[in-house]
Image 1 (cartoon, one colour):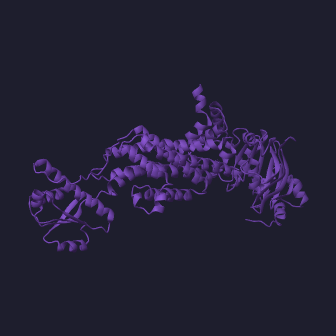
Image 2 (tube, helix red, strand yellow; image 1 turned 120 degrees about the vertical axis):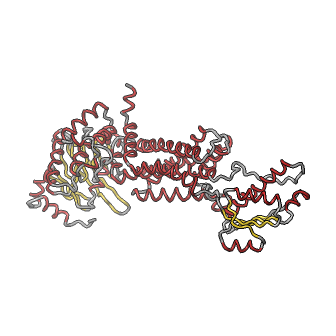
Image 3 (cartoon, rainbow over the protein chains, first blue to last red; image 1 turned 90 degrees about the vertical axis):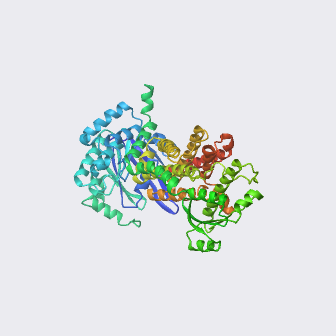
Length: 247
Length: 375
């Protein structure tokens, strides 16, 4: 982890009519960091993430991603980020290899790179026997590991993960986090939202969103100390207690 | 080397992916290629406005050579089935009231005599007009049989019969149903397939979340759309070929005009339909609603307002005006002109221009709304 800032927001806000989904959030994320973006349902996590990915235009405030301006340099941002959405988002009717080659292809990887990358990836994931199978036939945990690997295939600076481990058993989740660690070791910054408080412990730093604002931002250890809590679970409950919004 | 570079381009990657989707989805494939065949067969044979074996009655007061010969011709026709020979015209109303008689033909006494000596004879045709379309069609069948007989009489005789104005069904002398239906089915199938397929395939990506991934990637949204459209354009052209081959071989339809022109005009409609599909997908969130809108928005208006099932001229004026906004109406006119009347581009440039204008408009609006959704 370095002190190079890769995500920087300044009073980033998104309004939908009268409703303020994300209210003046300001934070920084450092290169190679695993940054946990936590909050209850409806706290505004996904909205914030969508703005950072360029899927949604902010109502006000500023942000830079990998040094590029969120309003004017969206094309450069797109080249430097990876994204894994809340929904499982590979093509179920394509095989493992076809998915890898498609997503690699749209990031402009050459045929030669694609061949190397896909065989390397299939090797790492231990999916040799499944390479020619349709993704639909894989268990959910495998799909999600594949989706993550595809999201970082082009070696982006930052990868955004929106609740990547929903509905997955603890063992697979642990394996998934091994993939995240290895990506972070390669210098990829991880920006992850989650509902699982044990996962929050795995992060270098976490932020807590309540009702569209960031209520707390620190390392898990410091937060536990600050709120005199034994676990992140207690910190979360303590912070989220005051929430008015809950979907 | 150059070719290899083009082949690994994002566009090619995309198009290949779209083809995987299409060919791995058996239901879509079945619909894509089954629909035109079913439609052609259905409209060509089952739902035809050519009327066969209609029950009719004949009242022959003349019982002479001329009337007998005409009756034999009527009996030989596949359109009619002579149910009963009546003795008196009073029985006619009774027969109609029984319900299954569609037409009555009455020959007056001295039919042949009048014909030979006055050079003019009358025959009365009464039709059950509770179904005006059927009545109209049957009357013209009967008239054409009588005319046919008259023509023979004139040919075989030196007596100068009075020449009754020749009734000829222009472009469709045998009143074949297919000439009306094939262009209609072409419009219907192309619109339905293109609109439905594009709308559903785009909305599907929204539903599964893959659209988000695509939009986050450096690929331009324009490319996403184009690569969706190209496979369906290609498949629609195959569909068009299937329809044309079926109508020529199975329905014995002629292609009197230029095939190239027909294909070009059809491509225009396909592009129009693809844009419409895109527009629908921009405004819907689920595959079901995209499907429903495409079906309701395409199937029903195409059936009603294209003019192939119900003549537009018979509609009330407000409805006639409404028909103008449906691309299928213009395409239908174009196909009929090219395929059946054998006309060239000079005869259909106006319709083509209207269709082209609609396509541009739909394409612009849909591309614009797609961009807005991104913001």
